[in-house]
Image (cartoon, rainbow, N blue to C red; front, side, top):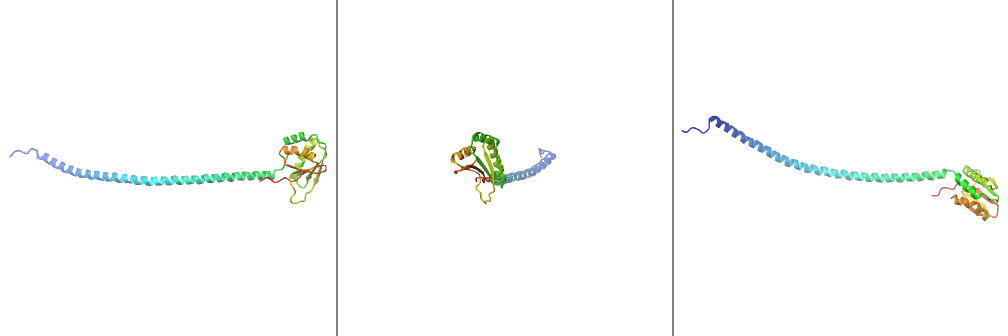
Length: 209
């Protein structure tokens, strides 16, 4: 008999490694299959979770946009309310503030009224402190302009007296004394009457709406 081409030890080693390699192929095949399945599964999960996160992001963005729009609307409303409150405060300030002649107004009135020679009666409701104070400013103007005037007080009991400044007298005299006030933007009502001029200081008119 011819001798065997391999030794028994080499044959045993080859047998063992053949068996191990077979099981290795099976094991790593299973691992490869699991890896492929896991790759597909994780890819699907990524796709699914990305869609969920995308929808949530869109919802959150839309919600933030709505909340921002509501906040902007509320800000606009608050600004309108603040403007209305400011206008109301100004209306109340004008309503409560006393009428006064500024130094510049007094100087201009003195310059224009200087030279008047006809007598003037300055009449005021002494029950109205605001009108009395304003009449004092006008009286000071008359005095500095060299106007001969007499101050008279009267108590007005009417529930609705005519407010503001009124001048009664002859037409030329009314214009001579009322026009300088008009040019300064001070409202004054002139009425023609065949008598010496009366300059009446009544209650402060209500502010215009």
